[in-house]
Length: 379
Ligand code: GLA
Figure (cartoon, rainbow, N blue to C red):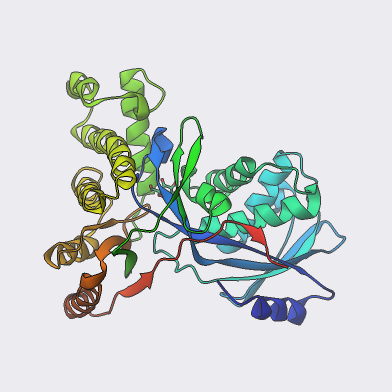
């Protein structure tokens, strides 16, 4: 997390008066990828990378926000027609609008913010931003009365309505509900969840960031979601959560080959999350890792959200004897998440960095994972 003092200083450089400090984290996801918008299970945890905001009401009906990372100021009103131009400011504006829809009388504010969640890494920098603001606005203008699920939903809906990504609830949920040392298994249909203390004895979870982001035309994330919805409609069920492989086989002739592959991945992944939960209860981390590799295969071949660089990193992991490795998050670049035995860690990191750099001309970045608390007020 960014040091509070730096953010306070940036606030003081641009605005008068005192301020409060809020923060919200990015996330990892052990397993359950592209299952959230299919009513399935996910298994995320919050990390100690996040967004820190210094903020205070300014007594007007306009917001002024200073992004320390972009070195830019945005000023905007709070009505629907006031949508700001700067892409980063749209996330904040979207959260203001969604909080208003929840009945919060959002008023003008001044803020400065900065983050250390790597952008485009699949670690949910945008959810961190949304959750930090949703949490702060709730404290400032609603005395904290909006419940945490609604805060997560406000972040998700701001993506749908003001950013154009029809994401599921996982990222914002993890950013709001995160708990130090715990992963969370969320059932995205019932929204019931459980905390799972996660301290894999003898193993480490780590991320390898390829630092590539393939900007693909035509919103491929939304296209994946649309495929799933088409198959669910063909099956006459609400989401693929209610489908099993024999159901899918039965309609194979009526759907495109591509939609079939997408749905087959989702149905397999739904089961893998449950297998992983069971394995965790028995401290069977090799089983957890095996499932991670299978998820990667599905994401790469059936769901087609991986890319050459990420497939390469997973292959190196396999060759180094890493227990589990897969692409994490929405896909098309970003990180792999890896479950590594302690004694293999150094060797894997060295080889991954060396071989990746030799092939792609730049080094990947390595991050250890500390599972941390969700959105909160710091000062
Ligand atoms: C992105 C979305 C999430 C989820 C993941 C894939 O991070 O924001 O809702 O769908 O992709 O699991």
